[in-house]
Image (cartoon, rainbow, N blue to C red):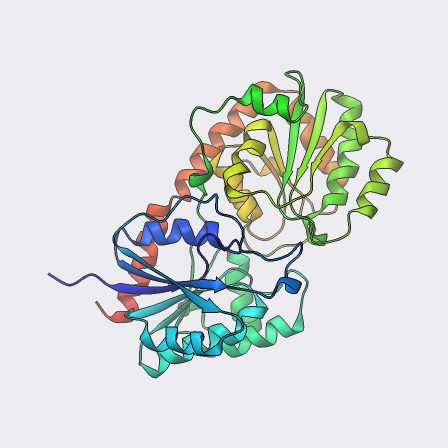
Length: 385
């Protein structure tokens, strides 16, 4: 009987926020098939690089609880010795690094180089093939880092093509494995009526949720313009915007005031702790992701999928993968098309029910057990098992 593979996963785990939701689910799923040594952070970024302050203050995540996961929270952005020690002392047969953020480049470069020196394979899960802000610096860093990679995992078809086109990675060294649903957010015994009441939402209101960090590419302006048309046809509709600000809110506030729809909009413009995420999805009837541009799959979309929420998405990146019926995939930067889709959904309760059933089907396609199985095959292939 062959011994279990030991994989060193490099990324973030709670209480660090960053990519912790994805890494938490991935580590638990992989641990069903392999031993996992998770290399995480004690201090990930200097506070000035992160909107609203330090990113390590969310203690509401569930704990990693399995004997097959050994967690090492020792990396500090200001301590290169910690990078070197982790890289040299890691016990994994291979390194599986989660790559998404330019400030982590020197840390990742050091740890990946240590694995290559030990003649051990390096796999990258590339969450952002290109930066959301089209940073040339991120591209150059990724270009250099990927020279240390033996294999690459991406989340969408467009990502695979980008890896080939921009980084000249052979396509036979790239696999598409989706971003799984984030089911750990689900809470049992929730009183939806009470949650809605606390938010000032009445039983008659139909709530459209726009969830996730407020960033320029997310299409907040398109959602606000579309909602102005929605409210004319569905006056009981409410737009719930929830997420930390990564940009100034004033331009959106001016747009809301110009359209005279402020009384119909509910905002929570702060970081939503993991333990509170369920409240916003439980309160909503429909989720929208009107991104202007995007390449990968959305963590917020994965959360919506975990709650089996009806979704309307832009036709960008991997967002269409979240919906079964292409009717609910609209062109980016098109408030009119978005409004028409929202109105159709809110005026037809039976349609919303069907969309919930579709979300259930999609969530099974994005199951972590399947993700773990596909990932383990890559490990075995590289280790020639």
